[in-house]
Length: 166
Image (cartoon, rainbow, N blue to C red; front, side, top):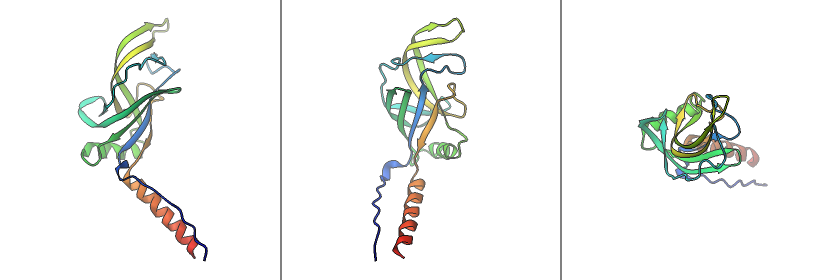
């Protein structure tokens, strides 16, 4: 009998891992502001993950903040094992009821454009919140991991390998 072996690895600590594009470059937000590449010069992590910019609703921490070619990308962890609200928000993310990211920042340098918006060239990033409707329409959660999804993948792989063993 031929056998097919598929190696799988899941990290136990992956539950609550989250990633997102917090501010896309090259496109204005809902009020016309554009944050320019290079504006996030001095990003300090960890940054708090809040729900709806509410300082009384911390959900976890952003552990990585990188200015990529397409915008500000964040990686972090919702504290789903320790904070009940983080579990609730993750459930909302999974069904796309809440999928936006909105950044809280202090403008250090900007120029007002004739159309009313600003070109912002230097900011101090203070926090990044999970929100239903972000100020920048392109700011979205791009990945959220749960232990449940890892277990479903493992179950699917077990079913597939059982099929090959027949």
